[in-house]
Image 1 (spheres, one colour):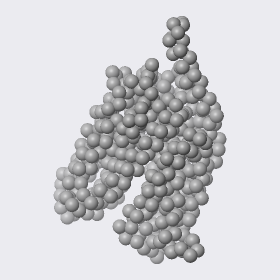
Image 2 (image 1 turned 180 degrees about the vertical axis):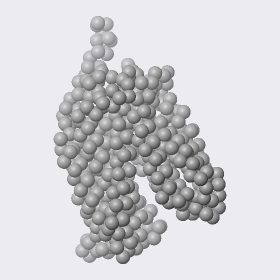
Image 3 (image 1 turned 135 degrees about the horizontal axis):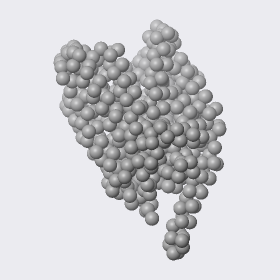
Image 4 (image 1 turned 180 degrees about the horizontal axis):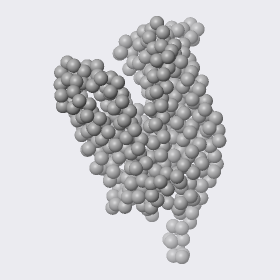
Length: 454
């Protein structure tokens, strides 16, 4: 009989999310800057902006394809250390190594060699990111078999995710000023590696009871998408992230174009969102346990949908008696409400709907559920970039013509409205009943064994 994961186990599981969020945010924030704007080697740009965008899109495509492949491999793995920990153990050092290597382009100046180098190492980076993150997420429902424990694990993951992002935003700039870009990358890489390895201390087989699955890739994907609650949830979550990514991509433009602020002000507005989200995590944890995951997901979607259209008025005094700057900060603070929920609730929902898999195939394939989600979500991220580009291209992105930037809020809200409609059909009672049946059945079998019954 497996043991229940103690509090220390929940905390160190969450620490891993701080590692990959820290490293990924550093890469997304600084890689393009040091290849396209302020070259990390020499004085000439290393890669043209358009080519950098194309290479990044190809990397994201590799990332999306890798999700179901890694998921199936992880679900079917048979190892003395379990199904998930081996991936996390061996991918971490390679992941951090490739991250550091990306900031060492081979040529000081524009060269086809830099183009090829960037394409190869970005592809490796995203593949190794998936090799760690997909098994890491799949470990959540295996380590925590009760609704309460799953919400706790998702909350600790969210806490360290926010901390990782905060360290990247604040520490990145400070380390560059104190040392150099390369010094920053090495220190952040070392810290990220330490955080990534922390969850490996958990003895997976002591706390997770899961036999290797046997389904092939195509059959596993097909079966996953026939899980109706999962498909409904996924449709809603994709629309949320479409909207959220549109807003995230444009936050610098909101501050600099609509508000007339400087680069330093961007961190202030990011801080308003993340700070409120961090404060609200205990309340989200309580709400999920008290009112259920569906209720908290609906709160997240509806709150985001209500506040997003007000982005259109940023830079104006749209709250009577309050300055434009303070009104914008208040708006960003309210955005922290749905962000807090979206960092916690989806992981717990995927953990819950994966319980239905035992009824469909008699196997537990948590990895494929997170892998299928990752595949769809990463394609959605690419679509959100295209939508953002279209709005800015056709409606304007300058101080003189800011309509494209202003429209991003209402457009994002429209996507989330679709998600709200989808999620009203999420059958939470059916999912909870399946979980209770699975838990009760295992408890009955274990009790029978303990009594010497056959």
